[in-house]
Amino acid sequence: MKTLGHWIGGKHTDGSTGAYGPVYDPATGEQPTRIALASAEEVDQAVAAAKEAYQEWGHYSLARRTAILFAYRQLLDAHREEIARLITAEHGKVHSDALGEVARGMEIVELACGLADKLKGELSTEVSTRVDVSAIRQPLGVVTGITPFNFPAMVPLWMFPLAIACGNTFVLKPSEKDPSAAYRLAELAAEAGLPDGVLNVVGGDKVAVDRLLEHPDVSAVSFVGSTPIARYVQQEGVRHGKRVQALGGAKNHMLVLPDADLDHAADNAVNAAYGSAGERCMAVSVVVAIDSVADELVDKIAERARNLRIGPGNDPDSEMGPLITAEHREKVAGYVRGAADQGAEVVVDGTALSVSGHEQGFFLGVSLLDKVRPASDAYRDEIFGPVLCVVRAETYDEALALINNSPWGNGTAVFTRDGGAARRFQLEVEAGMVGVNVPIPVPVGHHSFGGWKDSLFGDLHVYGNDGIAFYTRGKVITTRWPDPADSGGINLGFPRN
Ligand code: NAD
Image (cartoon, rainbow, N blue to C red; front, top):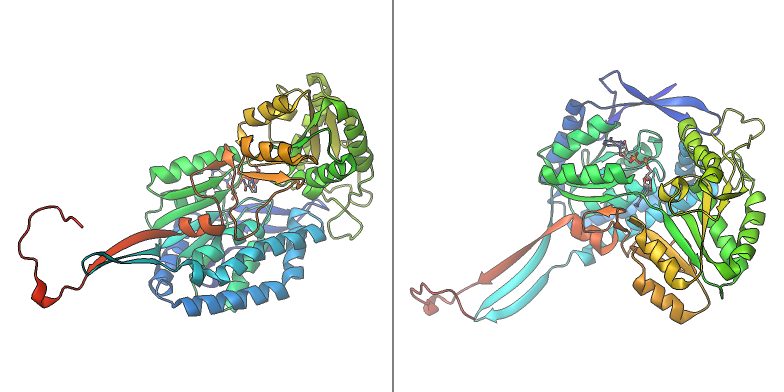
């Protein structure tokens, strides 16, 4: 069995606690790897390495930082197949989807390559006689990222490239369920010329997270994961005086209006609900269908869902892979088994699926639940699996009220041919990311990603301009170079322009 330790100061180190977490191959159910779970002292070592590296990295010229980021981008490009294979082996998603994940993560490295332009300051001259004012942004110091299992490469890449491009040093605590991709990202950064200690990775669980949240040398915390942990991380981080952005879970609604192209809508609902086995924070988990087209739409979704090919992620014929663990599969299946008792119609039931030759893998077929009641568990909880709920509404207003009553507000989408209706929806809906005939509106790298309500605790979204603002702090400098002949003399009054 392979054992992963930590990556501290540019070197792999063994874990010292004797505590390990299992890393499974979800397609076989085997456990080829284990990861060391860090103690508070090991987290301290990583933070100390980052703090030491900051003394130099903070003074690296923009040109040198940029050159390293360009080299990193080239290495990621050369290794994208390998990183995707690591993702599939531990997460289970199909290879093409894993390649997409790497590509979306690389967008942020590309943004970071051009950061010199974004870090330009502002200057106002002669705001008063011979007085200039300039505004600059400076790095924070040591910052940390805590990431979920469902995008083991992309979410770390949302964070550390921008953070280090801004001049910070970084401690990453990846999900202990599929950590290998994160370690490979760190090794490649070192190969690109990143100095030791600028990027560190600790394996770990709650113990490591709690130490990062309280560590006096950590200035800021980026977190992505489930809502209860996001809320906790934000509260704990703020309690310890840190800047925090904590992105949580979601229940993303896709509204289908009666004038929509129903075949197009059904294709998109299936792709967005079952892609990556529904383990995406931007997955569509609820279709809100206006009554007049609901029967036809449900038929079209069901027909497509029944034909999906489910199998190991490294088989090019598979369209959907397994879930992350056996426990998670059972939890997801429980929602389908309990749905009928809570009033839903189970149109497609995937709970009996078995994949030949992979009977021990964590596979679950896709399920489609119609006429789901807003008070039922399947509607209220984030299931995070291949289960699509359909809720019917009589009118646009009823549909909008349902969506806006959700405690989450990550992504949402409207499918329609009516520009006026789409415009109304994008202004009225309470969510951070809206798609118009786009089911998974994940913003490109130079915009920012983030939800509203229980999908994000904190103010600034990740990457894009918000990411740069998060990883820097502003300073305003007021300067006067007086003419020696022009002393103003003594004046105790408050300066007036
Ligand atoms: P999770 O909350 O269980 O874990 C996320 C991270 O928190 C991991 O690194 C984990 O080790 C750590 N953690 C877990 N329990 C902890 C505890 N009690 N105290 C401190 N730290 C703890 O999430 P997950 O299951 O890995 O990921 C799936 C969740 O992430 C889903 O809810 C999904 O919607 C969400 N997610 C959100 C976004 C977004 O952008 N909003 C993106 C991806 C995933």
